[in-house]
Each structure stands twice: as C-alpha cells, then as structure tokens.
Amino acid sequence: MMTGDWRVKVLDFGLAEFRQEVLEVGRTESQTESLSKEGHVLGTVPYMSPEQAQGRSVDHRSDIFSLGIILYELSTGRRPFHGQSTAELISSILRDAPPLVTEHRSDLPRHLARIVRRCLEKNPNRRYQITEDLRNDLEDLRNEIDSEEAGSGKVSTPEPARLRRRGRRRRNTCSPRLCLKFEGRDATSLASEVIL
Image (spheres, rainbow, N blue to C red):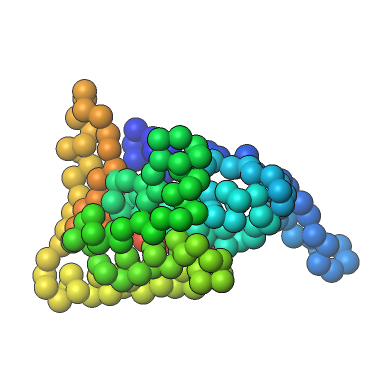
C-alpha cells in the first residue's frame, strides 16, 4: 500500500508467525516461521509462488518469487501473471513466462529484466538462493545507473506532484531511472531495504 505522502507500507503478514530460537545460553533470536503447510494453499493469490500455489512446502525462495512479482509491478505498473478467476491466475503462475519488464518499458535497464526474470523462475533452484545475492545485484544495477547518469550529465527526476492532483486516480508510474522515487529513493533502494 502507498500512503498519500508516497510512503510504502507492508500490510500483509498473515502467513507469518513469531518464533524464538535459542542460539546460546541466555541469547535468543527472533524470526518468523511460515504457517504454510504442505498440502494447504495459503496466501494472496497474485503474489504466490508456483510451489505455494500447488500446496507444496515453501521456503525463503518462495518469498523471493513474491518479491519478483512486486519488482515487476513497480517497474511496469502491471502484474506479471493474469487470470479472470483464481484458477486461471494460479494456472498463469504455474505455466506462463511473463514478458520481460523491458518489453513493457523499453527505457528500463536490461539488467533489471534479468534480475526480475531470475526472481520469477518457476523452479526454486533457479531463483536467487539467498536475498543477499538479490540485494547485491540490485545495488550493482543502481550503481551502474548512477555512474551512467553522472557520465552523461543527465538527471532523471520523477514528478510525483503531477500524479497527486486532486480528482486523478493514482497509478503505478515509473521514471526512466527505474521506478517512481519514494521519498527520494528509487525502487532498487526500496527493494534492497525490504530484503535486508
């Protein structure tokens, strides 16, 4: 969800439960544990991974798939998987390869398309295996873009004020830099912070 002052808020924690692990005597670490169990389908359908949609066991790589859907949506303004019903949407998640983000937005960096495509791999073993690798690729991409802009002297700035006009419906809009800036940060910064 995005607030009126362009702050991003995560609202859906319905499938996480709190747990504590004892690491050493007297020291604990708080974590979340998935409530998804094999054989049960739980979650927000448009953001489900293939294994989640099939009721198979899930791990952190399922979250990477879901983050890939969010990155796709931030970059293009549309979801990668479509269907008129829940069954059709699940079928699309299981079988369809979405168009690359650069097919919707030719001004986006091709490396972003590669990163998002890797997040959206159907086979969990072909996705990023840890979020740190995804974060590193996003930070590298941001640094490449920053250095290219510095070299060209070009600065791309989004115009969120234009989108806030009264009576106009907000929609996902991206700047040529990558994506709409939220409080002065672009989508790669936000995604990096989300997965830290």
